[in-house]
Image (cartoon, rainbow, N blue to C red; front, top):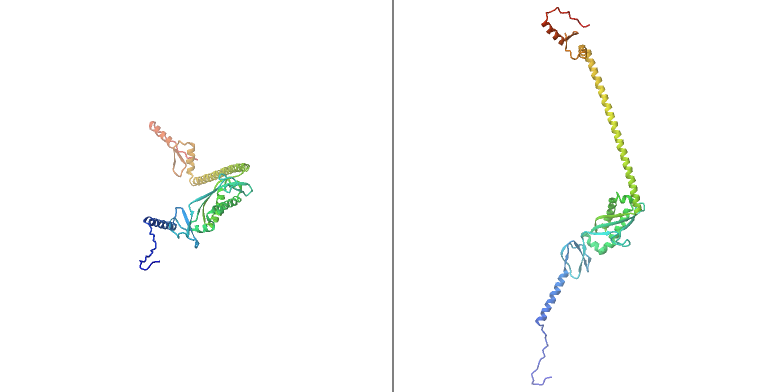
Length: 326
């Protein structure tokens, strides 16, 4: 209390103003908080990946994020990255023990023989359906879909063929059958199948030896059949050649007969040709002339020349009368 006449004092509240150093710390904390909020709102999808956004308010968003920079709601949207590049799964005996899930696939052929297959499957995530993949399967799609389905479809395909055909001529058909079956399964689960590779097919040694012997016998039969076919072809060729020669001989005989017929006709129509032919046969070196063309006279030109020369050297004598051929 105050006494009368004394001045009244007023108590002012004690106000503590922040020092300049404390003010700087507040600004730095605010800047860090802002940077943290901004970092939570900016997401970068790396090359070869696709992002699936899960919103705490609405769930999985249907449109996936492609490669690049994207803005999302901080503390509300969460981005899950999926590798969309080519991937592969190998089921082989050297990948793990036979009892492990990663081991080779054991199957039975059409006749019931044990066959072990090493298989590699190449695939990729369907970028346009990544949100469905995340919603239905999640990141564990290798164990839930790919490996069990590969084992099942490989066993089904091998069971359609005989063991001898699988390890020899039907290998590509087995791969095609597996590929067709897996493509449908992968497409139904938002995956894209790239290829199926049968790395190795193994059967028991005793069965392999029996198959080799059977194939060797079949090859020997094929060789003998080929030889018989070649012999048959050779015989057919000989028959064709003989028929050709016979036809040629017949045609030649026909030609000669026709020529004789024409020659006989010419001789009948020209009797003088008979005398000419006889003269040529009797003395091929004698030069003969028929005088006249309608007569039967034969004149030896060489003898006539000799007679002419003798007459020039000796006195002329009375020529003998010419004789006609009977």
